[in-house]
Image (cartoon, rainbow, N blue to C red; front, side):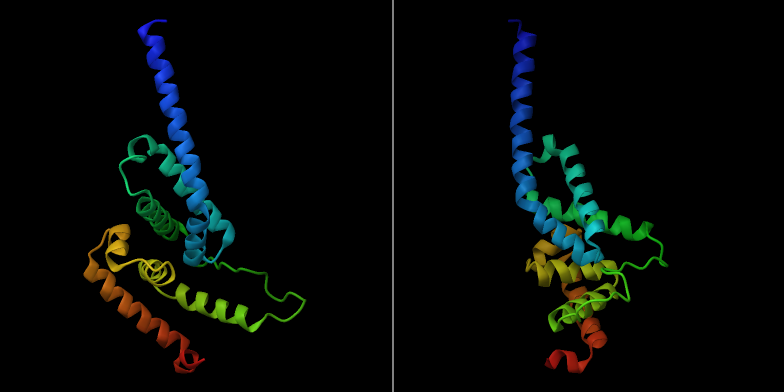
Amino acid sequence: MSSEGGWTVSWRRDRAARDEEFAAFVAAVTPRLRRTAYLMCRDWHLAQDLTQLTLAKMYASWGRIWRTANLEAYSRRVLMNAVFDQRRRRSDAEVVLADVPDRSGPPVAADADLHVTLLQALAALPVRDQAIVVLRHWEDHSVDTVAEILGVSASVVKMRSMRALARLRELLGADFARQ
């Protein structure tokens, strides 16, 4: 066997190992990425598209990042960038609905109403503030982690989080907080 043939076999083995690592990574993070994307866009289909876009971008740089980067943080950052890009492209006139209006069937449960109300209030925030609230309070990341994911300072995360929560309280009203 020539030295060139040995190099090819080694390269293929390395690539197979990287692909196995990527497949394991995808299996581990896809549900979390999709849930986070849904909280940002309120559309399961778009959330799936954003998740797939995130994973495709990560696969494209997997050979460079698979052993060096904090893959969890990197995946959240790629997802948030995809969400921000999608928001910039989307028309302001487009309305995303989880369900078709005026449907027949049993009434929606109180928990579902609460969920919809919270998501509508969250959607009223600017997209960066949504990202901060979702990452900080839904996914329970530290201020420093959220700052790293979004590429801003910790003080920006604290300030925008405080303002976003105040805005949510304003949107939801005083009676909502007492429930």
